[in-house]
Image (cartoon, rainbow, N blue to C red; front, side, top):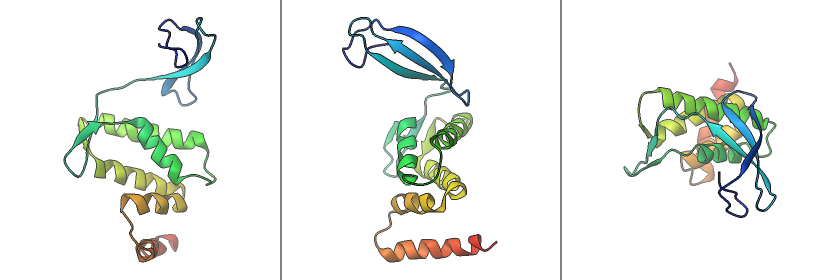
Length: 153
């Protein structure tokens, strides 16, 4: 593993342990060249996934991009970071076990929306505003109105 600080190719693993949910291995590393310490995560990848955009363009699936979008939606909300990570791991496992290598971006967006709806309504609306491309306040109002019958159950 290359040192992210000095670029040295010869770093040493000082400690390895599974993450809390067992989906990855956390490794503490040390660079003998510059003395820096850093952490890496090793995850099992069942297959190479590609996201098919609405334009038809394909790009490699990026777990970190998915995690980032969920964190943005959940910013300043009372949701534990570990829970977000577990949800992302769950979505990735579902995608990998689907048997498909090319996943439409709309499918991923709907999966995220479904998860957020059960976690935090504010984050759900935030994500929807970007995913559904809200253009004006009326778009928010229409979306929230559709949620109201669900809240009264």
